[in-house]
Length: 260
Image (cartoon, rainbow, N blue to C red):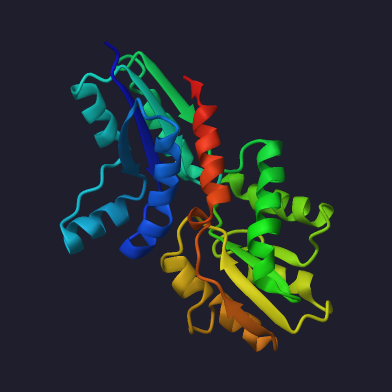
């Protein structure tokens, strides 16, 4: 008899309470679609895995650890679903490592990150309009992503263009470590007459980046940078994984997972 599993792979977070509000609901939404499969978890951030091990004594598998266990336990049909935003560095790790197990697990299918197809962008824009835009009231809404040196960083620019052409010209996408950066976003917002700006993370979790790079009191945080320009800033520290609409998207991606 076939042994089936669903392995959900996330970046991870050291904020345990936020994990329960973001990563866990996404995992449950995916697992709910596969009652016949055993659920497994892995993370791609070795730094966070090590931090949890040292601080809490909790062990979270890295990708290869989770796959090794599945092989050892005789699973022959595995769906792997990434909960990453884009097809960037972290997803490359997922795809490349999981692919090495094709000779040991007969059936492996991989579900893609949040923003992969053109339809994904349209659905994310709709989710932003329905779930995030109301947070901003009459002011601007700034979504803060992570950013990356990977070519997939273009994901943020495509999302910005999709928002503009969908008529959401008061919604801005910025990043901590990529393009557009905070200064680029300030330039786009210039002379628009905004008095208030709401900032919220465009990340699955609301962890260190959301609490410090976005909402922190340091001079270079997004909140501080906007306040220097005279805006009243409202911070909504809530990751995308908290919203049922985004949870549903990952579940849908798992159901569309392609065999490798």
